[in-house]
Length: 144
Figure 1 (tube, rainbow, N blue to C red):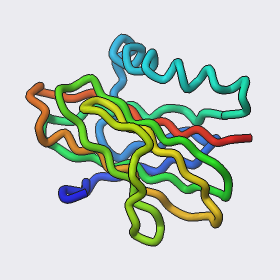
Figure 2 (figure 1 turned 90 degrees about the horizontal axis):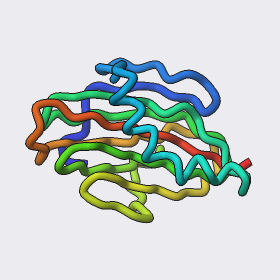
Figure 3 (figure 1 turned 180 degrees about the vertical axis):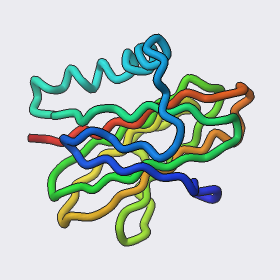
Figure 4 (figure 1 turned 135 degrees about the vertical axis):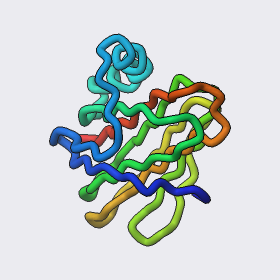
């Protein structure tokens, strides 16, 4: 990602997120974003376990990043916003950038198999967003 965020947060699967940027705390706005994860949350019956979503608000045009410590296994990482335009990038520990399985102007879905423990970075860039502030969320799912 060209404008990779300076602000980062750590999230370990199964632990509460520790945000270093501005957390979105408005219950109504969080609930709107949470609805977007419902199709993925429904995959629990197929063996997928979701970590708590990390909800953020950032000024329009401001990038942000979320750091994840992943153990070996199969994962889905979902980034979602309610703004005009979002670009999401996933950076692996070796510096490579896996391409999203699916992406749109408001969402990205990454699917990956992790063979060794490592730190992954999901960069979210709202550079083209026209809103005054942008709400977005990132959630990690791991196959049990």
